[in-house]
Image (cartoon, rainbow, N blue to C red; front, side, top):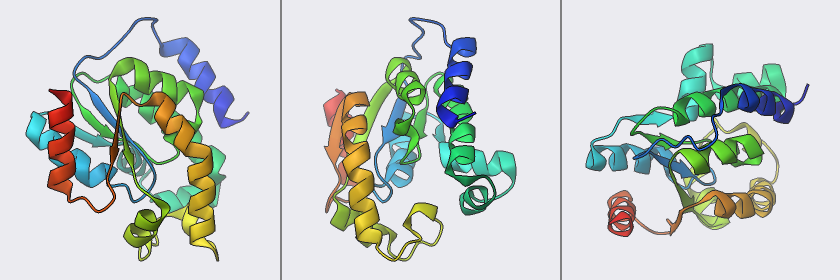
Length: 188
């Protein structure tokens, strides 16, 4: 069974039409866009609890994401991600940083867009490379051509981020506090 079918089955079991968790903010975007760092600061400013879907998966499994990819492949990781996103998006009044590939699954996109405000933190491939070049905890970048891989991922994912987003913020060259300020100003 593939990850998409698993997510669809979970969706059929747990989603109630019209359900929306008011006051929740879900950050999407590519690796290196600053979702976790910005999410923590945004949660402090809003006085809301912060969650990170990747960290939640690691906490539940007791292993890091690269090991999950190694043992279960990307499909196994995406199944876990689907369960976590379904559960976390049902929590009232939170800030959630999602993994960069969370938008690949249509059920995840549905949960995100119907249960809160989705903020797409856009970062150029140059910015992503700069922010991730020393990070060995990103399985999809363990390749001889990280730039090519990031360009490939953006080509696939950018339309999905934009489809799901209520708000798009360009993070290139911006400090965390400036991005958070821009989000807060836009939300007003």
